[in-house]
Image 1: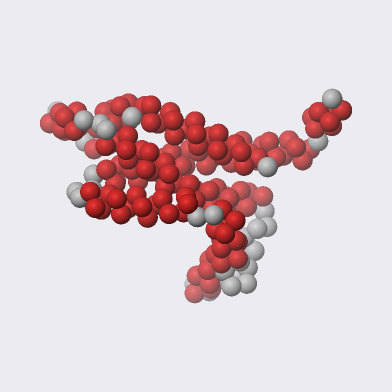
Image 2: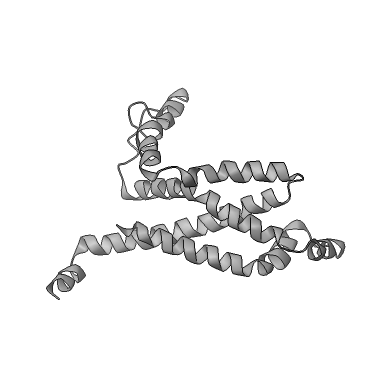
Amino acid sequence: MENYRRLIHDEVFWLAVKNTIVYCLAAVTANIVITLFLAELISVLPSKWMKTMFRTILFIPCIAPMVGTSTVWKYGILGTDGGLLNKIAGIFGIAPKNWFLTTWQMLLLIIIFTLWADIGYNVVLFTAGLEGVPREFDEAAAIDGAGPVKRFLWIKLPLIGRTFAFVAIMTMANYFQMFA
C-alpha cells in the first residue's frame, strides 16, 4: 500500500497520466479521421488492383519492427545533424533544429510516428467495412440528391457502426498501452 500512496503523490506519475490522456485523445481521433478518409478514397477506386495496391502500401509500416522504424525516425528523419527534416529545412534557409526539446513538440512527433506506423491496419478494417455496405443505399441517396459527404455521414457511417466501434476500442486500448 505504501507504493500506491507514494504513486498518488508523485508529480512525474501525474504528468505521465496527463500526457497519456492527451496523446490518446489526439492520436485516436486523428487515426480514426484519417483512416476513415483514406478507406473511403480507396473504396471508390475503380479497379480491385488499385485498391489492393494502396492497402498494401499503407499496411507495410504496420509489419515493420517498431525498434527499427523508431531508430530510422530518430536518426534518419528527425536527427539534428543529418536528419531528412533538417536537410529539407536547410534548403529553405532554416537552421537545423533539435526536434526533441519540448514535451509538446515531442508528444506531437510521437503522435505522427504512431499514426504513420498504425494507420494501415485501420484502413484495411474500414475499407472492408465500407465494401460491405450495399451499393443500392448509396445509389438511392445519390438519386435523392445527397452529395458524397452526406451519403458518407448518413448512409455509410451508420452502416459500418460495428467496424467503427471495433476500430475505436482497439485503437484506444493499443494507444493507452503507450503509457510506459
